Amino acid sequence: MTTDASTTYHDLPVRIGSQLQPQHADYAEIRRAVLDAEEMGVDVIFTWDHFYPLSGEPEGKHFECWTMLASFAELTERAEISALVTCNSYRNPELLADMARTVDHISDGRLILGIGSGWFEKDYDEYGYEFGTAGGRLDALRDALPRIKTRLAKLNPPPTRDIPILVGGGGERKTLRITANHADIWHGFGDAEQIARKHAVLDDWCDKIGRDPAEIERSCGVGQNDPEKHGPALLEAGTRLFTVSAGGPDYDLGMLRDWVAWRDEQNAALSNSG
Image 1 (cartoon, one colour):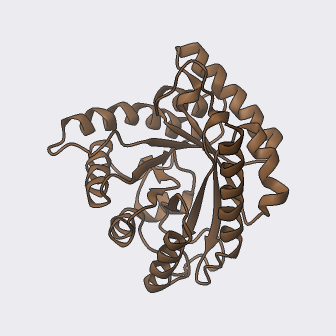
Image 2 (cartoon, rainbow, N blue to C red):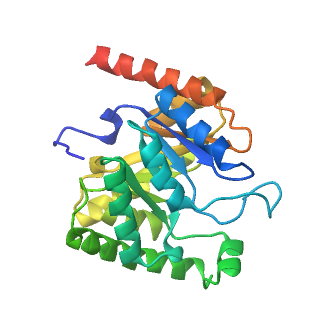
């Protein structure tokens, strides 16, 4: 992201993401939801990186993240694609870099590398990963990100672009510090007051390391909330990427359509004011 001295993250255009949760659905249903979201005009199509459903029947239908992202890359033409977020624990950093580079090429440069430290203990237990502690998993994420960047620089062919890195999580001592050091996008959850606080902490970490905070786009999950009720305050707090969630098997994208329309209204107003 290129900025100048007068730019802040409040000046960026509004974008809308859709997290299509791959639980309790056949892949044909996921595919249709991806195509519908693309046709609707969303900016980013997210999935998540788990091995089991997070709600409903705990042993219900579920699919793996990165093989789906490769499919999303072929299915779509315009929207960016990403995990919200990849669990750092599940893949060697060098392997993850290679996977990201490959999906980047499949998508013609539309991949965002969303990543976090991991938290869902059942995934770890069932697939044989050491769960450890929250602090230990964050330290592992901190150490993995430079390795990912180093491997991306060595790959042949290289990525089609500098793949944007999205870090998810709101921890103020570690996660936001990692974000300041490595991320192009920060993703969090909460109301406008909570988000504004996280932005202030992230800005402070950027100041401490000498980084322009305008280089980091601010993203927030909005669930299925109404954009007219919840959008303005989050927008005022600095959020520019709003992600609407939809779970299977019935991917109801009605609220997503409302957010896309709201995005267009906000960006039109921004353009007219400029």
